[in-house]
Length: 492
Ligand code: NAD
Image 1: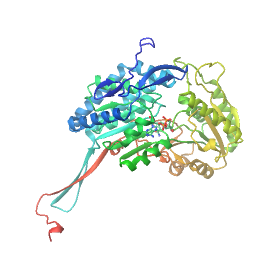
Image 2: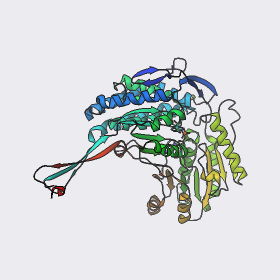
Image 3: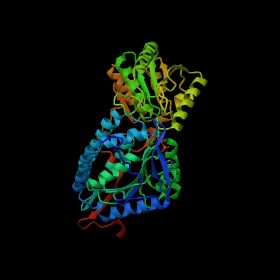
């Protein structure tokens, strides 16, 4: 597979067939590394949304709901196997559409997508209700039941994995769905739909609608949608909840972050510095869990900042299609300008830019930005509080453990936190006291389909991944049966 032989799916996928938007409207998706158009994609409107939801509902009651759990699992295993055959194509699509380096899309992302499908394929026949010991001869048990039609709305930062993280558990739990990927990066989700069909997923079980906020909003308020699984910004997450006034749904919201990365003087500083730079540069800093607030013990701050700068200088930034590239392009001109405006704001707020903050001179096209490191940050500055979603690091010093904990928690977000220390007792104390859904000790960005993931505070509600996903995508029904002569209190 080469760029020359690559073709783009760019229509809507509804009930197993490909079609244009009913309005005939399209929008352009760009390659952010060149700023040039890649292709035009169908722009769904309210009519298309309705058709997709109707198709998903028909597929739910028409068979998917009642398919034996292990048979559902078999289909998901076949999807996992099929993904392997499309590794190169999927890698290329996300690199071209999102500016993410090919070595990451091709290897990390496709491998993780395969593992995610395998994990949830194996979960299908292990989901159980419970028998509850109530007064005989009454029998009480719980049933785990799918919601019905679920809508998944995803952001642009890890296009393939954001889609798979939703599709695999939603389908494993017996729901059908409509997926709406972000308008900047629709291509791998459309390819995924084709792969799922080829692997034997029945028509209507997965529908993919492309478009922007209009399609997203129409989906999230559609009366036949039972559950909204949203990943994206906190502001849009709140809009979706506000829209519950049009009809209440169940919501899983995976939102923004401003995660603390806490380095104590007793840590392995080489390792902590390597990981801190990786955290802020991976995917060009467009990672919800990025350790954007580096809290460092004041007596090692100067040495540590020098280590960070040395490591940042060595990173290879440039053409995302070059297999040696470590930092690709930001997603769009709009995002590039947004990040640049935060860098200007940081300087205006009195912080000191000690590295980066500019476009690398050798990158003449596209939206590339050197990692940007700020010192002299106060935690109440806007660049320390607001999610920038670019390679911008705010360094804040602390005197002792108590201050580190207060600074870590002094944010409206609570997605992730990392702690670097050799003191085991301190590691456990911070794991207890830091308010975030994910705590990494002497590691960072380790994730697994088998481990749950979700935010505290304004970083979201609900969990993704792990066996816990079954609680997100299934309802629990309580069933009472009189197996003998129980006399109901109402008849006395
Ligand atoms: P966004 O909120 O702008 O868009 C996300 C999705 O919502 C897109 O598909 C968009 O079309 C859709 N949308 C926009 N307006 C809508 C509306 N009114 N109703 C319904 N849908 C609507 O986010 P983004 O810019 O695509 O992604 C970046 C954000 O995603 C960051 O805040 C990042 O932290 C977050 N994110 C969170 C996680 C997590 O797991 N917590 C993972 C990845 C990204």
